[in-house]
Length: 376
Image (cartoon, rainbow, N blue to C red):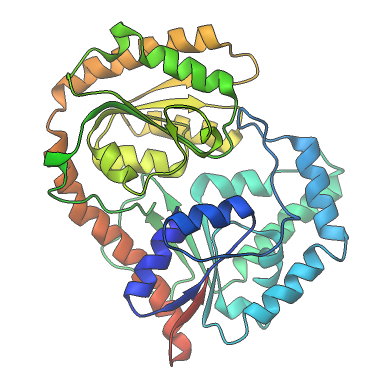
């Protein structure tokens, strides 16, 4: 999502932007938002099961073969080197290993910028600790830190980071609130309000979870409320399931006019709930960074409830816990009405947030002078 946001925002400032992605699914998704993209290669990927838990053995095998088979990582580095010729700024929004290495080496490091969530870096650095031979695990951690520390810049985002009053482009690292699409001011009057808006990221594909959510949200005690309500289901992993959509260009507006949001505790979901002051049901999986995000949401007072979804969960137990969480949140929400006014209030704040991201990237890209061109 950040990729398409920054693509359009940078182009609006006059930058020439090209985009590389790592999968055919990513290319199709970006195309839906008007972003043409090329697939770098299909060799590297983190492998998840249908419950969004990383499959460690499959992922370790994929990462190892990517590093050591010359027609994988070395091939990608050669291809990236050709792409980066004449580019003023290279933005890595996926912590891709080939670019992590290149970002620490000349001649690319002075043009390299890494974007990552606050909770993700620790997960990446500690990925092999306790699972791989000690020196090898520590080397991997050193290698990640090396690539990140030597790059031109780092944009570290978090749902709860405040927007600084000003940002000095000469500084190599900036902590910024997670960028979001802009709420359309004035569009709420004609928009159908939903009792719940559900978003599950592409790593969720287990039909049991979808069925449990549908069952829970059809429970009368759970969804009593406005007559024009209903439930909006969004999930790329459920594109073929009746009643679900694989993408929504106006997701931020749908979220702004929903009573309750439902999502895993990814940074964008938490940022959306925080920016729009929406109650949120967090579907927490076994992923460490998501568990840390959920803990932080509690520490910072975000209005939310947690419903676990892991290898021990059943449809029946999940649906029962979800109904209770939804009912509790709707009671809490009684004192936080006026979602249209809240949506309109969020627009200028979200505009300032996105503008700050673009300001920094444009300043970094223009350091060499001449026409600004960015590779994302």
